[in-house]
Length: 146
Image (cartoon, rainbow, N blue to C red; front, side, top):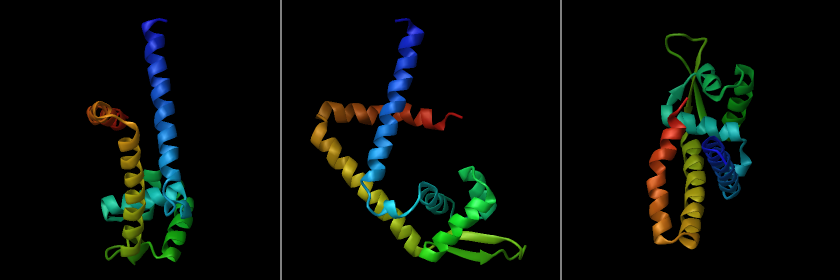
């Protein structure tokens, strides 16, 4: 195997493991199964940014404004978001996360964190846990690359 093939195999193996871990984490939260992936991501964005326009959310999610409108309507029905009219431009709505939306987001995160924490404790030695801690730095660099 050439160095290039070895590097490509590393990329392929890493992609596969990360994808499988994401799927596993999604399945370990019964709360999150009530919402679509985009709905969960939208709630997380609102938690991070506090207030956003529907068009900003659509751009961040890389979906159409019409699709985002449907997602926001559903989240509004569930009571997970607030919608208010922009003071300077009455045609625009400002979206924020409601207390119920924040609670559901934190509940989902907590369910996943608890499962992952227990899985790490059950399957990884102290050395392997240290290796995971050290792997966070290069993994974070990968996430930040465009």
